[in-house]
Length: 219
Image 1 (cartoon, rainbow, N blue to C red):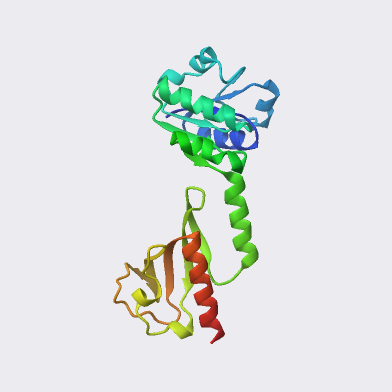
Image 2: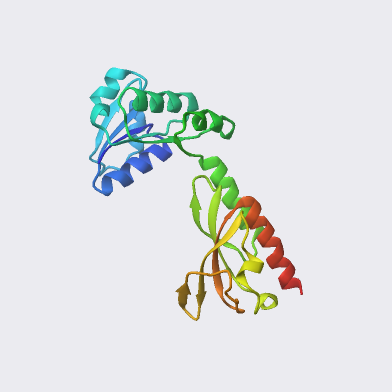
């Protein structure tokens, strides 16, 4: 794929290098020539310094034939404008925007772009780790609005129907593992102590489940 990475800070340089190592053709843009020092010495993609809002510079980067673009500068307004220009002028199909300031996330969402918010995601992960407990995050979608968690069925839940425990709009079972074998869960399944259950949940749903597991462990 032909991929343009706009911004060569900590996020942009790591992203560009990973994409390059996977065999993509990568062009990195930044207004500061010194920013390219963040790239590892064995990076062999192209680098172009200049005003990333300049259409001529974007054309030099090959935006008219780009398959994807990531706007990851530390300025949300710049990321939004670059993404909007790439979509409207050159019809780039796959665009991902970094949200630097959590308060500006609505700016990107208003345009309907794929948004990654490292600050929001990081704070959420740290909060979960500090909270501890039986629930473990194994997959995060978007910026953590929906995640997949893993937990082990406590003794107090042995013999209960899965539907009684989990089925609702904000917390739904994905898989149940028993004695090393996984199965797709049905609402009629009777869980056993020691079963490992994976659930897909919103933050609201997982907090409710966390409290129920805690209460079950207190019995």
